[in-house]
Structures are given as C-alpha cells and as structure tokens.
Amino acid sequence: MNIANPFKSYKQIAAQTAPPGVVILMLFDRALRALETALTGFEYTDPRQKNETIHNNLRRAVDIIRLLNNSLNLEEGGELAGTLRNLYFYFEDLLVKSNMQKRREGVDEVISHLRPLRDAWAQMLEQQGQEEVKELAMA
Image (spheres, rainbow, N blue to C red):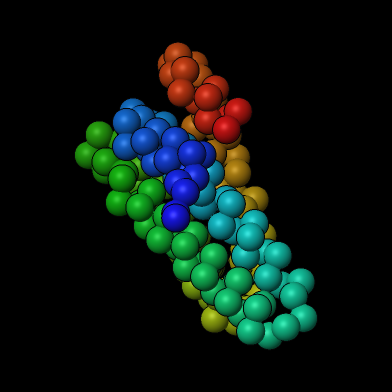
C-alpha cells in the first residue's frame, strides 16, 4: 500500500493555486535547495555517489533557472527583465561548466547571487501583502 506524503501533497496544491509571484519564490527556493544539495556531493568519497549527486542536482537547478528565465516578461519588465535574463544565462553557463568539470566554485557563485535575488523577491511580495509568503517561510 502506497501512503501519500501529506507535505508533498500540500506543496503540490500550493504550487498549483499560488499567485504567480509566489510561484517564482517557490522556484527560487527549489533552485537554492538543489544547489545546496549539489554542494554536498563534493564531499562524497564514492565517485558514483559524488557524480550522481552533483549532476542530478545541478541539472535540476539549471532546469529551474530556465523556468525563471522563461517567466520573464521583457516587454513589461524593461531593463530589469533584460538584466535578469542575462544573469540567468550566466548562471546556467556557470552551472553547466561546474557540472562538466565537477568544480564547486561556479555553484558557490550562483548561490551567492541567487539568494539575495530570492530574498528581495520575498520582501517585495511581503510588501504587496501576499500572505502566502509567510506560509511558505514556515513550511
């Protein structure tokens, strides 16, 4: 018998019903989680475990960054959207190289830029009164 994970179900429903701004925040959070998990792979001594952990999580992070990039509205977003597009392309390039070379420096750099973006986005949502942000922070 397969018992459903209630937390996973809650997260899926939250993602499907959340306002677009909150979905973006969830993408930032998931990308950061994948990057942090990839970093743990660099500590493994078993080559297979190391490579799988790094590869799978960096691929996941790249996919999420592509989603963030594709969500940009360049017509309405103006210069900021263009800047973010270039930044996301840069992140993707760094992560692909880090994955190929199994070097953590690119991962560290992306995290150092992505975390402040995530925090600024969360702050903006809070200022707009999006209650879902507080619920996500507690989850």
